[in-house]
Length: 257
Image (cartoon, rainbow, N blue to C red):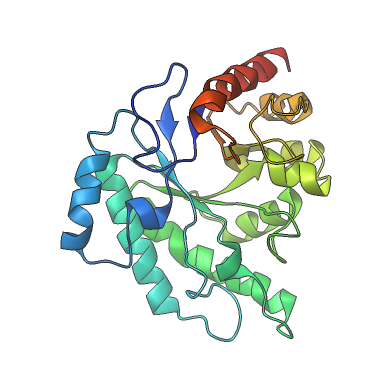
């Protein structure tokens, strides 16, 4: 199991013991809305960062719609291609598709139609990601963050329907804890899970902030043979002071699950 943290290229002053990678945002690192020269300096900086990025999140901006009446497939595919191509340049292999603003179902629009749109989109994104050696991981969000793909079971259903090896699923212990999504959902998803986010459900701090026991989620991940990346995606009162303790507590809970 490799521990990372969701932060930008300037978030760390140097290496941190026990931290394997960072997870910036797509816009902050890969800048798919910009042409190549505008992005060159950021990509070059990523290649010499003290802790290298291996994953990115916040795939789509809210005005680039994945659901609703204004979905523009060509614009979406161009965004995905630029992001995946630049991800490959700097060694990023996982792109997190949370993007609640982009996929939130507009009022009055059919939820079933929106689910089909997400499936259709991911069917196109899969081959694009595969060309660049990248995996796109769909992130179920809590109900107060988005109104579609709000459970691991729902996410797994859409990923199975997309049916491409470069489209996989994320489990986020914060979103699961907030909405009571059970650890058993991780077991049902099985090998679809290819990335994990972690924070306490109470306050979204790092593990240890309020003493929340998340070992049931970790046991479920162990039960499906998961041994990949877990990113701390948290609210921090003091990032530098809490990061070390958060890494240690995550490692402790994983090892004792």
